[in-house]
Image (cartoon, rainbow, N blue to C red; front, top):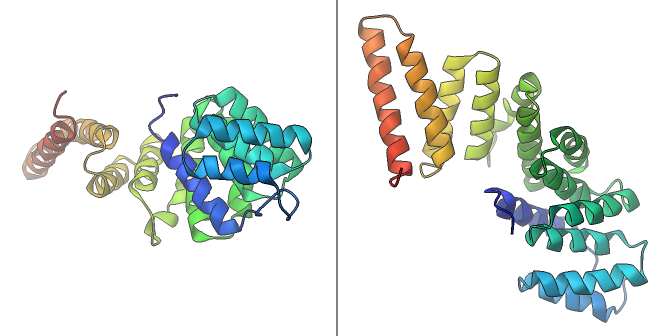
Amino acid sequence: MHGSRTWPIALAAACLVAAAHGIPASADDGDNPVYDEGLRRFRAGDWEGAASSFGTLVADAPEWSWGYYYLGACRYKLGELAAAEESLARAAELAPETFEPRYLLGRVRLERGDPAGAGEELESALRLATTPTAARAAARDLAEAYVAAERWSAARDLLASRCEEPGADARMRFLLGLSLQGLGEHAAALENLRAARSLAPGDVDIARRTAVLAAWLASAAPAGESGHDAWSRARDDARAWLEAAPGA
C-alpha cells in the first residue's frame, strides 16, 4: 500500500458520494452474480478479491463504466496507483458526466504528482457534484491540486466562502491558509492555520506549519507590546506542535 496520509479519506469520500448518487445494483439492472460478488467483497474490505471480480466483469462487459470505477477504486485501495489511474480514466471516458470516476481519478492523479491533470478532473467533478458531501470533497481536493501547482489565487477563491459553510473541515482551512501565505497575506494565513489546528489538534503537519509561520511573523514584529504578544502566541503555537508530535 502506498503511504499517502490522505488516501483512506479520499476513498471513503468516493464511496460515500457514490452511494449518495445511487450506483446501480448490477451491470444490466438485472441479476449479475459477478458484480454482486465484487460488491460484497468490496464492502467487506477484500480489495484483491473485489478487484478480481470487477476485472472479470469488465472483461465480459468492456463498456460498463461502473465496473471500471470499482476496479480502479480497489486498485487505489491496494496502492496500485498507475493501474487505478488506468481503470478510472476508462470509467471517466465511458461516463464523462458522472461525478465518481472524475473525482477519484483526480485524487489519484494528485497523489501521483500530477496536479494539473488532477485539477482538470476535479474541476469537472465539482461541476458534476449534486450533494453537499460530494461538493465539499471535490472542492477540498481541487484546492489541494491548486496549492500543489502554486495556483494560490485559484485556491483562495475556491475556499474563501466554502470555509464558512457548514461541514468545512480542518483540511480546507489549512489549504486556505497555505494559499494566503503563498499570496503574501501572512496574518490572514496564520489566522486560518490556527483555525485549522483547532479543528485537528493532532495533525502534525498543520501544527508545524502554524508554528513556523507564527515564529517568522513574530521575528518581524516591532519591539514593544505587539511584538511581545506575537512571541507569546508563537510560543503557544510551538507547544501545540510539540504536543501533536510528542516523539519529535
